[in-house]
Image 1 (cartoon, rainbow, N blue to C red):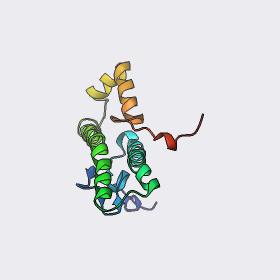
Image 2: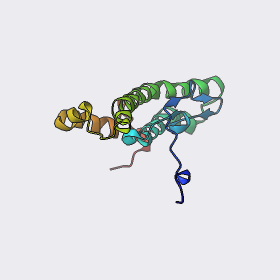
Image 3: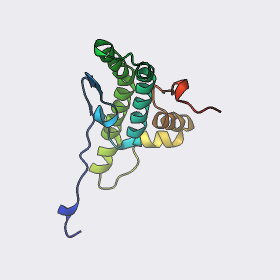
Image 4: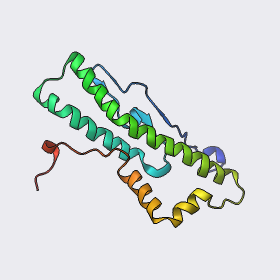
Length: 150
């Protein structure tokens, strides 16, 4: 690097499409909802979107029963199922940006804030946060036909 101009800053966005589907197409993961890197939950949310889509669409796709209006209705069900966890995690990320990240960036001598101090002292809060990062607020489960036989 020769100067700070060689450094590229990450454009952090938290947003989501109003409608994640159209005829013959379904947007999931980052295509449907941009997540902040805070917490590293974006990939988990994308995988959960894919599992929900598989659970709701694979059966009809395998049997050739998806067409026209039925297709749009099924695609809408995927968005309906995944919208709440997306909105919850984005709200949590916004709060973290406001209460933790922006405070730390603005401070000349950043100290852990009250929120971080509280979390670091509470086993229960650490477990809840760990669960939310790893599993999410609305866990998805692969359909039986998509699981390995034991």
